[in-house]
Image 1 (cartoon, rainbow, N blue to C red):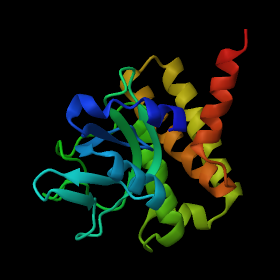
Image 2: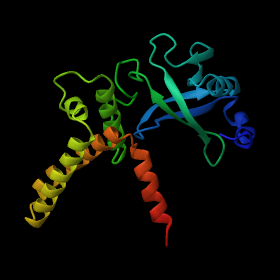
Image 3: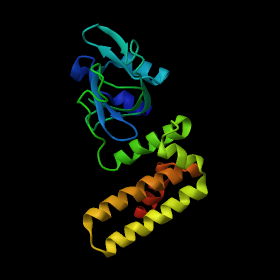
Image 4: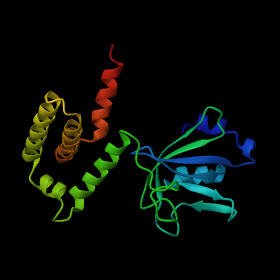
Length: 205
């Protein structure tokens, strides 16, 4: 959020409070809704941890200050009327006090956002995967083996498409996407880098 955007925020409309929608920065899920005043916004920007003004406590409240389930700030933006704040953050642990990943229940990541969530799981397996984890074992086998699996799954996708078996094609495509993400992880390439290339190509006439 730029200084100009902050200056345009219409604090008066909500008597000094603006709704702040928190969105998962990786998979796009809406995590929760809170309220910010100017001081909460400043603390969020300064600390990197999402902070609200608690209407019940009547004070600033950093999400996770008791539970440890903080929201790490990624980006801030205002809507077109400058009276609502969109907070993009990465949660550490469940967002809701009931133990669910969002305050709207166990909401699945939408569409392509699920791939980002899956990428995060694969990254965790790379860092501290259990011995019985297929993903961890595949990553330990090295880039060559990961690349080989992508090739094998690609052939399976092609065969399913030629057979005009839609159910099988969906299954094989899922296998291919998963193994591609593993191969990207093994090669040190993030999904965002691939998406950036696609976006650039989409802009090209």
